[in-house]
Structures are given as C-alpha cells and as structure tokens.
Amino acid sequence: MLGSSFITLKREALQNNIRFLKKKLGDNVRISSVVKANAYGHGIEQIVPMFEEEGINHFSVFDFGEAVRVQNSLKNNRDIMIMGWIADENIVETIKRGIEFYIFNMNRLSVVLEVASEIGIKAKIHLEVETGMNRSGLTMKELEEAISIIKENPQFFEIKGFCTHLAGAESISNHVRIQKQLKTYHKLHRILIESGITPEYRHVANSAAAFVYPKSRLDMVRIGIMQYGFWSSIETFLRYTHRERDPLQRVLGWRSQIMSIKEVKKGEFVGYGISFLAQSNMKTALIPVGYSVGYSRSLSNRGRVLINGHRCGIIGMVNMNMIIANVTELPDVKVDDDVVIIGMQGKSEIKVSAFSNISDSLNYEILTHLPNNVERVII
Ligand SMILES: *Cc1c(COP(=O)(O)O)cnc(C)c1O
Image 1 (cartoon, rainbow, N blue to C red):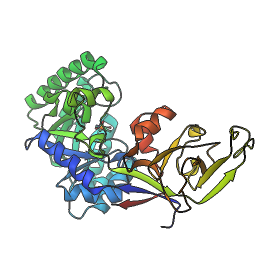
Image 2: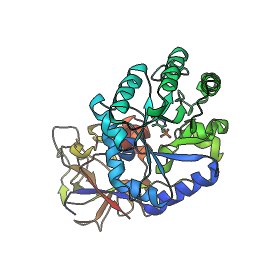
Image 3: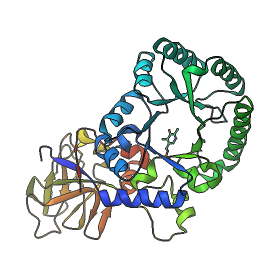
Image 4: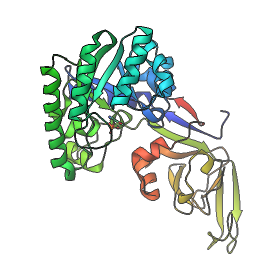
C-alpha cells in the first residue's frame, strides 16, 4: 500500500445491488448505470468493469472526459451516454467514438448537425425536453424546431432516446410537480411520434422515481445511487422497505491504520490550539488521514472511527494529513491496527450517512467528495 489509507469496494455488495435492481425492474426495462462524478466517488476504472460483468450494457455520465474514461474501462463495446457537458471541440470525437449524448438546447443541435455532416457519421442523440424542472431541455417550441431540422437531415441523426429529468422524486412534497412533469413529457412524446420520429428509448426515471413512481420506468431507467447501496432519501427507503431489512448493501468502505500511539497527561491540550483539553490521563492514536484526502475539518472533535470494533472519538482539530482518536478505553490497541473511517468493523459501522449527518451533507455530496487520489481496492 503506497498511500496512508485506501478505499475498499465490495464486489459481493455490488453484485447483490445489481441483481436486486434487475429483479425489481424486470426484463423490459433497460438499466443505464449512472457513473458520473467518478462513479459517485467509488472510482470509474474499478466500478465499470464490475458492472459490465454483471451484465450492465448502458452507462451514463455527465461529461465527455468521463465518457472516455468509461470507454477505456470497458472490455467490450457498450453504450455510453453523456447527459451534460461536451465542449464544442469534442463533439467530433464524441460522434466518432459512437458515444450517445443529450440534445438539451438548439445551439447544441446546430453544432452537432454541422459536425455530423462534415464527417459523415450519424450522431446518436437523446432529445431532452423541458417538463418543469427549468434546468435544461427543449421547450415545446424548440422541440418542434428540432423535429423539422432532424427530418430535413435524417442521414445525420440516430434518435436513441427521448428524455427528461424529474425535479425531486425522492420527496413526497414534490408529488404534484412530478405528476405534472410526467404529463408534459407524454404530451411532448406524442408530438414527436406524430411527426414520424420514434425514439429507441423513452427514459425519465432516476433511482427514486423508478421505485416511487413505477409508471415512470418506461423503456429505460437511469440508476445512480442505488447501485452503490444507498437510497435516494430516508423517505424512499421507508416507503419501499416499510422498515424491513434493507435489500441493498454498501459497496464502499474507507480504511487506514494506526500510525502511532501516545499517552497524554490530564490537563494537557491535544493537537493544534486549545480545542481539546485532556480531562484525565488518556491514550491517543494518530491516524494518517486528514482534510487533504477529504476528511472534513468540520469533523474536528466530532467525528468517529472504528478501532478494534469500538467507536473512538476524534479529538482536536482535523489536520491536513492526520487525525487523533481517543483510544483510552482500548487496552490492547497497538500501532498498525486497522482503522475504519467508513464501513464495518465487527458489529459496528460508520455509515456514510452518519459521517454526513455530522457535517450536514447529503450522501450524494459526501460520496462525490471522496478523493480521487486514494487507492481503490476491490475486496
Ligand atoms: C445523476 C442523475 C441520475 C441518477 O440519479 P440517482 O438519484 O443517483 O439515481 C439520473 N438522471 C440524471 C439526469 C442525473 O443527472
């Protein structure tokens, strides 16, 4: 191990999650595996081959750079879809590589037409429509314009999909808005069909929508967070499981080891400044993980790690490369003992959500902030 900590990826958990999703979604719904933001912090290069082995054959990313990384990580030729950003100068390469991508405004469509006609290769596009989120997508008027451009130039477009994104399917408070979006989507879809264009895949659902609104599954669902073993929100989890056992398993863990152990006398301060004063004689463990690898400074004097199966509090400030844990209650603790920052040790667990509740962020945000420069190990 070169680095001072490593991220573990549990293959069995990932297999469990994909099998669960396939079983629940059935054979008629294609799964597009969302691996944007470095596969939600897990690591594109490690995660994509495991998904491929589980039979996933469609991958969604946010930008061109991620699409190239996914393509390079695959054994075989699979479908890749860019839902967001491509610089104009990368449109050529996107089309040449056979990568699918969203048309979310008219400017994108005209650039694509220009490039596709120049190189004489069909662009594989998904028409994204605006249905009420007011983020990206073609309005009805723009869709009609787009249809006429596509019909005038059929040799340059392959219509892979017709899609939209729902504004918060993970919360019941958005129910009315979501229903309205679905209605608008179907209305716009009818306009497309009546013009004589039939998209290969209709897709609107993310993880939450696929489970909360089964009708939104259509031909394909774009599943992100659930593949990694998380529900989109507590609400979605309770709604589906009714407080029964969680069918999903966490894929990711984060581990380090004890670098050094020290006795601290009552009345001494620990670490930078005066934020922690020893109230009695203590034993502390130094752990080589700090804010440089994403262990947030907001966890100073608040975070917990697992050592020898026990929860140990972080004392003092989180440093750039190190934290100090209170191991006073662990008589047998020694240098090199395993330290769990996220994940299980014995019967104890530090959940990403516990980690995130402390620092007040969503699971999504915590995961995607996991550092790219920490080694990933598949276990
Ligand atoms: C991120 C994203 C998804 C996946 O969302 P999850 O909640 O992680 O399932 C689906 N569609 C779009 C457009 C996205 O940006």
